[in-house]
Amino acid sequence: MVVEKFSKTIIASRLFNIYVAASFFATIIFFVLNSEMYTPIEMIFSVVIVTVAFKGVANIMLSMTIALINLDNTQDKIEFEKAANKLESLVNDLAIQEAAVQSAKNIKNEK
Image (cartoon, rainbow, N blue to C red; front, top):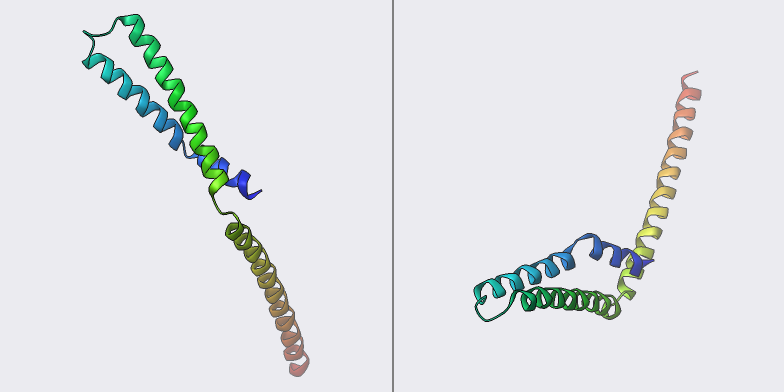
């Protein structure tokens, strides 16, 4: 659950897509600046190959990030938050019950 949430957050941030897009445009700029040394077919194939390679590197980076991150602390934090929320709701319920008892005593004393 923690790994899925983390990986979905990373993917939703579009960080790796920006990385691939930056490499794509950098490759295009490189070939435009050096256009006298390459044929158009070489440029097209090179841009495609470099973009696919950087997409592969981005996927490897995502996999390594997920594999190497320490999720034990995150799991403990989630369990602590669940326990804290449950405890807080129990305390709130107790406060409501005490208020009801106190108001019942006040009503009884007024009569």
